[in-house]
Image (cartoon, rainbow, N blue to C red; front, side):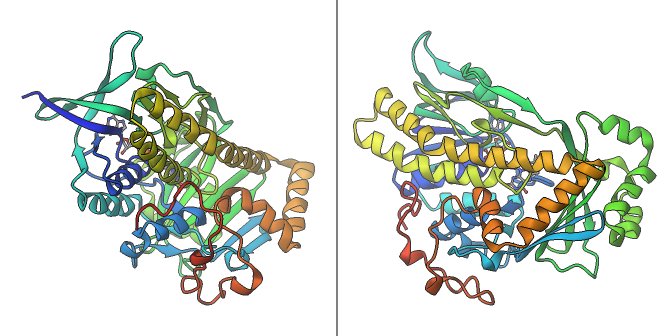
Length: 434
Ligand SMILES: Cc1cc2nc3c(=O)[nH]c(=O)nc-3n(C[C@H](O)[C@H](O)[C@H](O)COP(=O)(O)OP(=O)(O)OC[C@H]3O[C@@H](n4cnc5c(N)ncnc54)[C@H](O)[C@@H]3O)c2cc1C
């Protein structure tokens, strides 16, 4: 039977962006309905690396505590090129309250957010509800969403609709907001292997050989996610070469995994190909509608920036919506809030995108000259703590206040010295209402 609901904010998509926003709104007593097409939160390979800035935000939102024991704190990043270590980073050297990225299964994060939201009467999560249409009079603002569920259609009328439905956002397409999809030259194939005994579970490993690279990311509880590059659209060609070619490819990048990959990867269904692109939308909003997360700005997998920007978007937007509702909550006020949100966020997203694209170009260099230049660059950065800080700051430390040397976290006890009390430059109310 068809159903009708009425709310202040309708969020399409219960991913990191949509659920964080919904929790932050419900916390502020703003009625919110989330439409999520999936019945569960299981998402293989996706969004497990969470950047230090987001870890800091999760802590301030009271979520990190809920997730205790569910994540792996990463201590080092190591890049090997042509068999030699060219760059090694100890995250404890970074003078921020939360210098460490974490590896957290996306399903765990989403379940924790859904549970946090369920504590508020203004929070409603409808699962298996797929947004299929926007409600809009010709020339008028968006006033809600029509969704399909196994029990019939649902119409959600809302003052503001938020498109948080990811990299292939249906809501963005329905809105007609223009966006440009920029494909990268290479795609990535993901697979999962047991962690080899000689590897610790707190180090990101990047292995490069000519123009081939692999990311080896510890994944809870005891495996390693492997992502390696292929030419754009080259998965079919890779498959045509057969599994032994894939095994050889991994073994060349990480000889420690040679036996494991042969034993574990027995079918192509053990792998997952990811089409790598970024999207740029000049405008993230229109009357009655705002885009956030991947729907506003899809990024590449380099340095785990997708979840980071999704969470920061949500905590930036929530207080702006609250303010607009307090100012009358009309279409004009909400549009102004949405535009302010884009202004607050777009430079940071662009910086991450540029950093990812520069890194991708470095990965693709090959030959004596190209490979030599890349190794020289990594070694130069490796030799200077200041350069290392600068290189990673654009991705990992755009938000947190820099600690003075006296309050920097002790490397052996990173989680005990938080320094969050000394925060002087928060984003738009990232702490919400704790
Ligand atoms: C293979 C892979 C690996 C990745 N690894 C990392 C990583 O390690 N670290 C990192 O930071 N990022 C990673 N990313 C990117 C990261 O997953 C995204 O950037 C992040 O999840 C974006 O959050 P979001 O909430 O904007 O969108 P999503 O997480 O995509 O969430 C969108 C939600 O909307 C729902 N939805 C879609 N259409 C509809 C509809 N019509 N109606 C209702 N619901 C709908 C989807 O089911 C989904 O739950 C990875 C991505 C992929 C694909």
